Image (cartoon, rainbow, N blue to C red; front, top):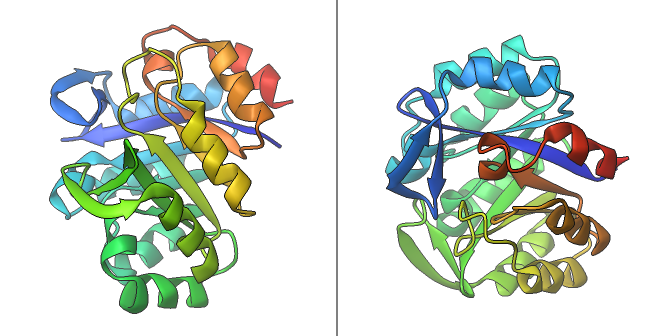
Length: 239
């Protein structure tokens, strides 16, 4: 089933939304736990939780809050942002998350971190985040270029054995100006593992287009928080 996944991005203990990952654009939407519960009540079937401090600084500072959310909601939760150690990944999964999303460390340490993680965990638990600006993958909270083409990365990670990919178009993220389908199509047509899309969703038509090209789901943040879209309307598309 195609998944509609509300984003719960956490920075300094608050639920926030950023434009293109820039902290100076931050808008706060309150207590992440209460926000997560609200999305659950409204019918969400999954939540996408990101520790933005962890993504930017490389050290998770919102982990206790994230674990509290996992404990208090009854829907599947995927977690990303700053997961760069095996014990952190294990803690999150053992606490009830059903999926972790690895970004920077997947590019930095494929052999010492990513491959052993995939080998030791159950199928379906490890996704890699491919955050693309133009064609280059950005890492460390979108602050640094990796020198890697997003499509090359997608194909390589499928060959390594990751369970799925999260593809984010940074140039569109948070701007409510619509999506760039070209990147998503390139990846979906080149790999067989699930691809979740993110970045720039601003209308129901955006979601329909993403669904109809064969993605496994879409993560939506700003459009929901700014009430440009209603979750109830989007959930009907998933069915």
